Image (tube, rainbow, N blue to C red):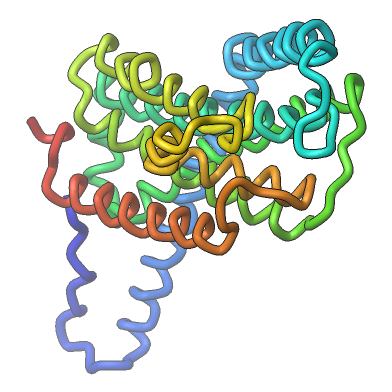
Length: 281
């Protein structure tokens, strides 16, 4: 649902005090509305922390114990690093991906299911700002879980950062991409089964086959070509490059894919909201 620009006050000339005041009030309303969405999403994350923060932390800890300590010792080094050092960035990124996606898809679908979305649709907030509010909430949860998993990783291995800017840029862009992806899923979902279908049958396999646990250089050429069609590979590789200084794919191309994904998905989300798909049906 698109928001029409504020109508001109009768008798007011362009640039008059009345118009300036009206524009200022509209900007203030948008700031307050956006902040309200972000605060509500943040409060939701912390209120149900047992569901939003604890499960991914336990899962990551099990990965570090099983794959890192028990299996990693038998695999040996990979790319000049211990296996645990090699998979740590991948496990951190996997946590960011799943939680950024999961927070938005569950929150926005919950708003649809509980009819809370109608309050936003009749507010003076433009649809692009509504999308940004939910994306900010998804980013917050993804980055928070990623930070916690990073701290856990330090108990198992040493993490040396080669390129700090690359690490920050990769994790921010990835969290935005999958927060937007969760928004698209929530828009089309008509029941709770449909919000779990994509993470279970599409997102999880793509993540596991995206180079989290291995280098694609270990695969035959045909499998490497198939892996390069997986966008998650480029996100994980760019993030790993920030830590280890090595990547299975070109880092510049990886950032180009992530940036393009953000632009395309954001435009798609705003278009779906303007069209009323899933919200006015």
